[in-house]
Image 1 (cartoon, rainbow, N blue to C red):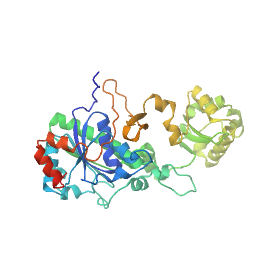
Image 2: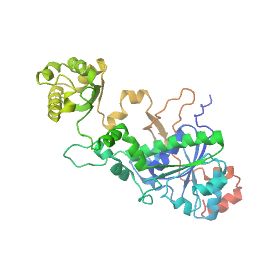
Image 3: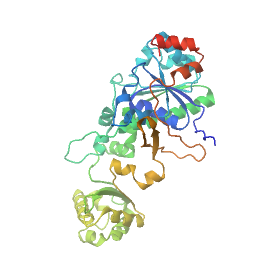
Length: 404
């Protein structure tokens, strides 16, 4: 039986990108059926091929960010290398790069260069700070994006230093926004015949990730209250999202609006105790820091009486949003994660194993995503060169001369 084609079948991508924010957009496109050609330096390849090493496995970093793509080695400093690139771009839909702003232009594959070859081309450029501004030419990393974009405060604890996190939130957010931007520009190009350049950045992605909390911060012109709980709104229309620990120290979270406060606390068996100390409604915690601290302290005390599974079950039965706070390892074994295929498996015969990998965050009823593996360095070079018209003799000469 023929494998169903993905929703991006027929889309061709050429990527001169490395690292995470620069490669994940095209990995996602490959999952969905696009043909993605990854350009790598001959003999060296993407430096991230050796990152995230786990004994007995390929590079977790490279594998996660480059699965399903094709690898073509190409020396873009050589005129003949750029000639190959131009031939690939001529019938491509998308080109992607994440060099420092200005580097691609200096090396002959900036947007204006490639636009002349293919006016319909969607050209995606990922940077650290954005294409404009005083630091546009500086390199960017995930830690830099997190540091400047506000997420360190979002997950900070009062009285403790702010720190960036271990998960590459800035990289992944930027990558997903780049993916969306590419598809928007591709839709426009296909309807009008006009391509365009799409700029995204680690910094810009982090600002978007801060969502409505950033809007509230700007409107109030003051930093938010951080820590165990997010209690916001007004006394008349309060909201709460808070984490607590159970009798074994295991954390969980619940979120609710003020109108169901009594219902939730009654279901848990806490309402009479809260009412007795003047905490009969959630609104008091909005208008008084003292009441807020008293409420959290009382809830800490109450939730420490039993296990989180019981508390989560009670809250969910009362139609209140609640969930255990998973570790990363717990998240990979969560029943909803597994049932929806958010974690999948891939075969690595050269390592003698089948391993857990990211699944797809999307479910398409007619064109399901297909999970691939990352290519070996230069694995598809000869086939791709032949596909744009090079003869066997010409391909051999390019190899002999170090162009590919």
